Length: 305
Image (cartoon, rainbow, N blue to C red; front, top):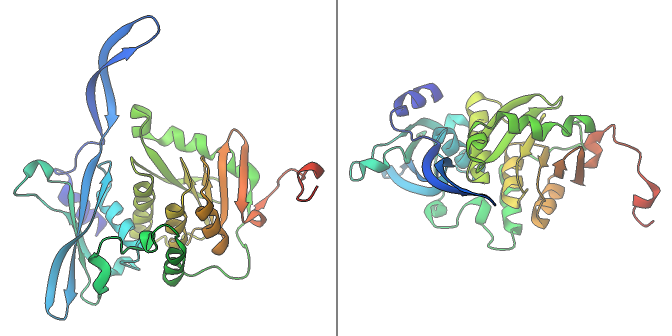
């Protein structure tokens, strides 16, 4: 299905970068030159689905994204929002032309769901997805995630050496093609427990990068990702942790800081959450039992000392 979809959109997708003429100002001079900027375009996701009255088509969501890998972005979004639970729920996926606005062709993906899939009546109401089901508190969102995924039991079985974590950031940076040209994209990357890079996805939206990664994994039959590390190039917010939980990921390592609700979600799902991963240092906010070969704790750093 993935190969068929990609073949049908090769002429419609837009480039991930655009060139603009800028003035580069330094302390001593002003130079006029061209600069590459990360593209940002809306992507509409349409669903074709069955009801008791027959087939219907409706727009589910619009997300601002960097063009490229749109089909996997749509698949990952549908999976991490609980709309689909397996690749078998999708019968076809493709880009659609926009007849009224040809310049927007390539910014619309239509997903046809299997005949057996039935959607909840409230799905097309605004803010009805898992990631926003409880306004500002997020508690109901955690419960919604729990109802859509299996929480690993029996304690932390995955073991990762602390030495594996340190080089992840440099490894991802060296593979970020568009970031290298623009400096303007987030990355989500998938590693195995030995630190081997398996997949990198880029997008102007950090949640889109994760959805693209999950979509590729769904297409390849890799889910659940229980023996992998998810790397995030920026902050670890609640939405990204819940997407990771739905994909079965047990270890998330972020370059930036986690939010309080991200930590609560990681604790609730027994996940290992690492923040401020840079230059051989990192903070473990939950699930430290999965990280081995760490230096001995200093007495001054022990709780209550």
